[in-house]
Amino acid sequence: MTRRLLDCGESALLVECADLADALALKAGLDARPMEQVTELVPGARTLLLRLDGALSAGQRDDLLTRTTPPRTHQASEPVTVEVDYAGEDLDEVAELTGLTHDEVVTVHTGQLWTVGFCGFAPGFAYLQGEDDRLRVPRRSTPRKRVPPGAVGLADAWSGIYPREGPGGWQLIGQTGQTLWDLASSPPALLQPGMSVRFVERSTA
Image (cartoon, rainbow, N blue to C red; front, side, top):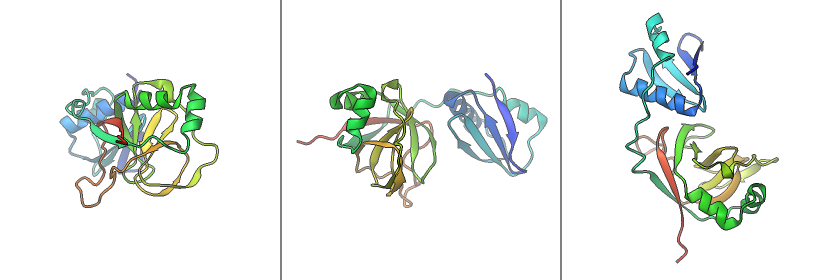
């Protein structure tokens, strides 16, 4: 395991991790045994940002380089289910890029468990990592000025759901009516790092 600590001013510390699994494992370790100076944990694809209200000791810094706890798996048996109408504007292009048929794209997308790695880009937007690499596709060469809320997309190794209308460059394969961001809920974001997600095709019957 290789990690690196980078100070971000006087109130934050960035831990560079080996990969996403390592970042989530470190987060789980800090959730299980918090450091009193840490006020917030913000995971990234290969990083974990610690917001601090005090300096960490040398021993605590050393602990961050080795601490690990397997991410909690209680959500793995209870994934968030997201119903999708697979009629996205880029379904043809995704099929061409992957060498799959439309039905095979849907089968691969629904046939695996996705894990929330981190959130960003927009409130409620979760980057989902899958188990099957066949849907790895590039972002669009020209981003759209408007992507509707609930659009389900692919970009590189990730899948994601746009929580609200806005610009975006992901390849759109479907649409869901699921609410991803609701200020009346606690927490407002439906999907949190470490959660599992299962996509299912919406029935047209």
